[in-house]
Length: 404
Ligand SMILES: [Zn+2]
Image (tube, rainbow, N blue to C red; front, top):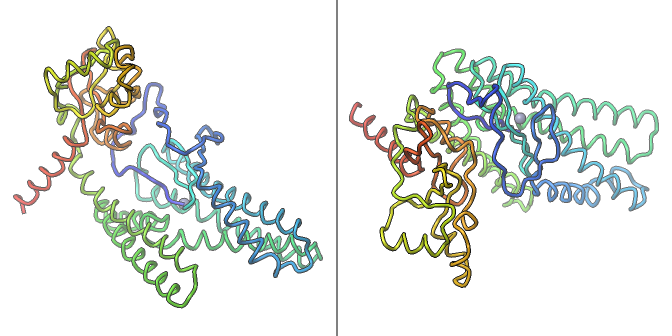
């Protein structure tokens, strides 16, 4: 439903050959296929949603809509409808992907979650028109699918199909129309928020102001939905819980986008070398855990995650004290640091002039505070951590106060 885009105007971080680097894996997400060349991941929470929707249909909707159907028919139809609904969410997301591709924006991955789909774009569309059109494509496909299902349902009624078919088609149609309308609400992070942002950007020429306005609209919409959900609950309608939950999510994401805008401004024009600091300590991959522990006791270091290098000095991994603790005392003399730590994804090893926002975007290496390792002429010259970036952002805010 929402297109997750980094907020920047920079060059796409194309790797060699113009392709984006492969995305790092997400916990709980299974890659189920690649359409068109973009990995599509399924988070386990989607299964919960399919089961929940199917149950809702089988118990609450279909028996009334198709009286006389056997329980087996009803449960089969409900299960099929749940799966089809997830497929329509995927279609919505793929519409974003295909149109983004048309505008020259690579999409790294599509992930389907309980709350909907997310397309991770390599960068934000470059112009206001591209931003609005890419955002519009998803709801448009949902609306067309919704209309198609409703038309089929009407045809089924008219032609006297078994009642269960028009019932399922009608539900799928309404659900997709609802999906289209909801996503078009003019508030970030919804698609309508991106459309609004594109329109304001086009009208005023001020991209940051457009982003702020659409994020502010998102916070207002989120709070309104939370209030609406509370009112529904007050009247004894449990659907209020769902409405309030979505409102909470929208409001939170919009707040993150507002903060993200400030971070982007602080990072603009900065490179990895600007915030990197030389590692306090470098661990050899071949050392035992015992040796490393002794070294650390002899000369304490401040880095939360220690860099692990191979024989040739190439950075190959990271290890934290917590990783060392996990190795049982009886195995510390035989376990190598390489085995105790975690591998360093190759896309985290960067040149000094790498734009900082490219390091910040994927977040730290899981379990550590490390964003990237700077290598200059084959030698490790520095580490970029969340702490050093946070300090830069704070210093920028301090500077902005001084100037105003
Ligand atoms: Zn969408």
